[in-house]
Image: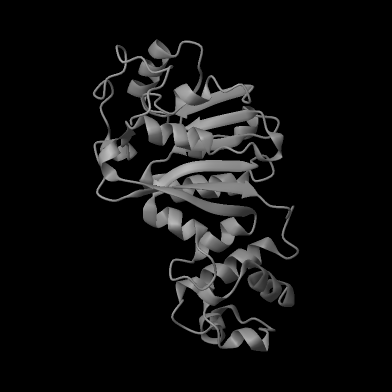
Length: 267
């Protein structure tokens, strides 16, 4: 049975009201059940009251968030002028920040903690996550839809073939849970791949107990030659002390804590 939203006005919403633009990676979600499930996935971890939605398009997710009583301060960031015009007409009270999320100084808009949510464009989804990392002290939670492959990669545990650079860097500061898969036909236009929704919740690690720049360099170097053992993959870094138990391992076999230990040993 299809979910019908009390906020959904069939007379004003049209699938073709805003043209999806390929260069912006737009695929407009049109399934009410999926959008409701994304909104419901917010856990309000650490009791935040502000939420920012990235790339709201025609507001299919927005309408569930704008009336959520737990959210005291709700904003959307939209770069597409057609979408902005549509949102202004159909959600006149909505706080719209026009511009590129990736280029914004979010501290100009939020002084306290805020969650990030959205049906993220596939072509910038990893950049959105790295932007979140930059503001991790203010972002206790992220709920987002990504290309399924990306969602699985972010959530992958050590030992998995999909475990990689972004897995380690995100999991150093966030606990990640893969929530559900979304089929292509619920989008307009439908993408060529499936999507996945994940939730990131901030862990207890305030900062790394090591040189963060060196940590990132070690992780990237190790995974860029993931078929090699660490003893060979990390040779170019000329580390002074690679612990014996890691020398014969490959990057995907190491946990975040293992990479932290290697960094500490070489700081």
